[in-house]
Image 1 (cartoon, rainbow, N blue to C red):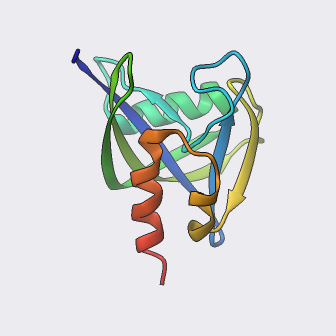
Image 2 (image 1 turned 45 degrees about the horizontal axis):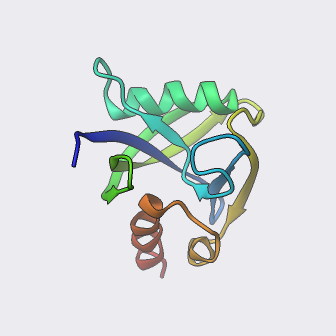
Length: 131
């Protein structure tokens, strides 16, 4: 198994709903739902990565908050360490670049989506925190 790639994931909440995004055709994991984010570059923190990725992928300004948890998953071609953070959406209208759809769902409804494998443990963590 090769090097593990560190990826930051945003758990953006609005009221009691959480944002998930579906990967567009032609993208890696096309058709799968995920918590948005991306690969952490060598010079950046997970929080900085999330601010950059959310601006690039959605044209929104955000503020990362508390660390939620991590998920390690071994895909056939690579291994991912997904670091999930609570993120506050500050401003901007969502423009989709690498996703073809977004949805706001209740925490208990996230697992009903066809999630990318690395995102499933994070979804389970969020479900377990629901009263």
